Image 1 (cartoon, rainbow, N blue to C red):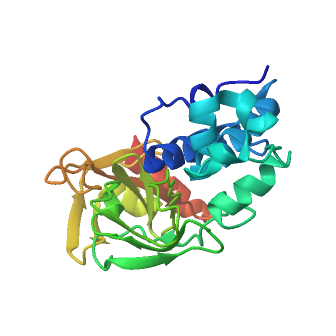
Image 2 (cartoon, one colour):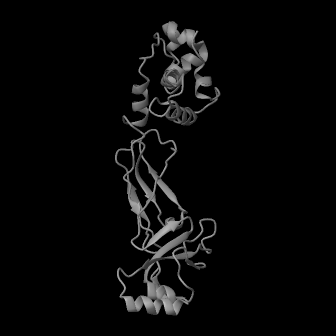
Image 3 (cartoon, helix red, strand yellow):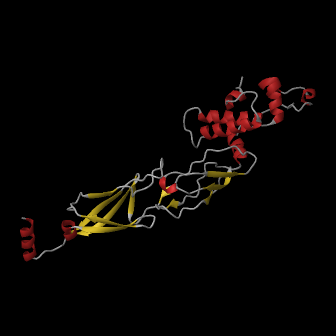
Length: 274
């Protein structure tokens, strides 16, 4: 006794051809040996291949629906095959990878996308096309990059081609490109300024060009010690939940100490710090 093909795919007997394809795609990806190492997954993957091989073929499906697995594999009289039923004895070829490749149109539906680093900036991100390396279901993936810089992808438009056009689970992995001046920390931007010891003790101002091209002049009137930070509210990255709100710009400082000091200058510094 084998197994129920419909139950294997998690569908009922009224399932349409699209339902059968959708169920197989989802479960085959889930139990494929390259993505699932759990005990029993290989056997499940093979069962899925056989179930899809039968239910996706109208003649085999008609025989199975009317005569069950026994009639499908044991054969039925030829006169019963007039209505389109499969009259020969069905034997699954036993190669679920073959079924998998035929369905997805290639060896590896898990192929990676070309990965482009996205700059850490506010402007300059325009809607573009992300090309796949060898993705058998999708060919052109139209991805809007608007607002991607604050962690929110507004729109993904997928152009599908091929016989098995069932919506797939696509995962875009976006690497943020490093910036020469800023480091992103959640929604905050960290900017490190180099200052002399004189500036750290007497005050100064820092000019910071923002990612959208504005120039901020930030006065520093406090004594700058090694752990000192200056927080400029609302000049960080837009919040993904509410792009009208932003994180903070946090200034840290690298204090440049002199390598040598003449004795008279040391004396003056001592006098000034008393």
